[in-house]
Image (cartoon, rainbow, N blue to C red; front, side):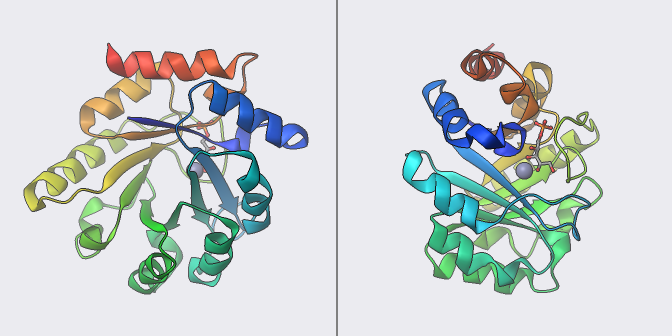
Length: 217
Ligand code: DX5
Ligand code: ZN
């Protein structure tokens, strides 16, 4: 299992320190939420922030693009040092092309689905992805409540993975805490993004440990 703290809930004025605190506290990946104010009603940061943090962490940087036409930004994120680039299924008419582009830079490719998007739509891209990210809240903001109906989607995806002998990771993102992480892990998820639960604390390391313990129980 991997814990990927989302810097969306970090202190932007002390981003480097917050990333190092998460790394020393046991984080496995760093999750970067890029939002364009069009695909989602919020605006965050782009590839320049990935470039700025890259020299300060040895952890894989997991970039979640919540932007329209993400194919236009893939090269920038790849060159900035992203290890994973995940695009939203709903954000482009050219999902296959965007995934091929990510892979052409030797970066791991992920596909993301919103809570209302059925997993069956992914049938024809599953063979080419390294990861599927199931949004467990509607994308755009940190601190929202987990949507329990998404658990069934994780189970279905896990079943499709087994039936076809695929080896993609299943990541979940939104409302993850010690209770919801356990349910997602039981449903088949292996990578867990957590923003507010990790960073809205004086001791992010203790929060990361609590997430890991919840899955071990
Ligand atoms: C939401 C983002 C998430 C967000 C999760 O659109 O994709 O990565 O940071 O935040 P929490 O863990 O607070 O729900
Ligand atoms: Zn995210």
